[in-house]
Length: 205
Image 1 (cartoon, rainbow, N blue to C red):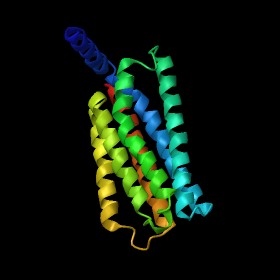
Image 2: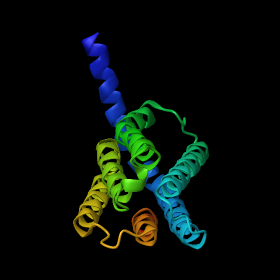
Image 3: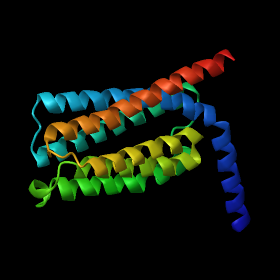
């Protein structure tokens, strides 16, 4: 039993190494799409005056679920294009690593943003929590993907820590939307552009 499990683990590791380039190609459009949706969501939230704590939490959780659905569709399209199975053992490993922190983020949003403590919650609480948890999710998934994902996770963790130190002093919904747009929009756009340029250089080399 142990030998079969070890063989399975070795096969998964070998497959992950072989698919490093595939993951890198898939990450670029996913990061760009996520960044565009995050930036657009922040702009819509500001223009639509989503300025109550419960509305803010519900709004951004819906944005997160829609963005996740788009990322899965893009991943499936990339898998079909490369004739790869979508829900393969390596993909399941990545999903399992990603899931716990994302689940905690959903629970935090429900209990802090929609629960009885919502009106007394400081505006920086949810953006900070989501940045830290998302960074931890990326870092965990990075053990099964390209090295840059772990570094990208650290960027979110450090951004969350910086926001926690700043604490959005005037406690405004506007600053909370801007923080979400800068992190989940701006950082993803920057990472997606980086992947596009570096992948293009690799193909030309």
